[in-house]
Image (cartoon, rainbow, N blue to C red; front, side, top):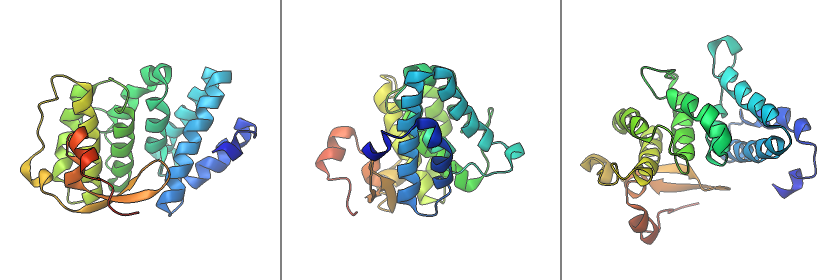
Length: 213
């Protein structure tokens, strides 16, 4: 990321958006992280310009945009995780994409992205934690193991952020689900079992959660 630091931020926005459509998971997730870093730099100069980037991501998720919106939810989560100010304005919008009474995204593949993005924002932000937990729960029964795993990841963060949710236990089928899914660790794609994602934090660390790179 350091190699991008000397480049004018506004000249990077377009190229980074194009990498959201990469078929390579590592490239796509790295571009998401780079976009979050870029947006943070822009926000330091102009909060309104940073908001424009987030609005573009929202627009990409609309049918009217003509696009699919790949990477938009993941990037929103990454940006909002690290900005309390932007999270206050846009956090509820990101969470609405898993809300059946909100702006629920029905596209099966986009649901993976929104589950990842919701999990990412919930690492640090306390916005709508309990309602998010409710809206995430149905994804535990998904036939798509990646959606199951991303839902478990997000719900684990919910559990960490709310005293009322701390006693929550995942269903037995999740606790024993040894299906391996790809997970981005901040720079590389690794593989982890869904059961490992369901472990409490201290057990997860001791278990050596990330099995393969």
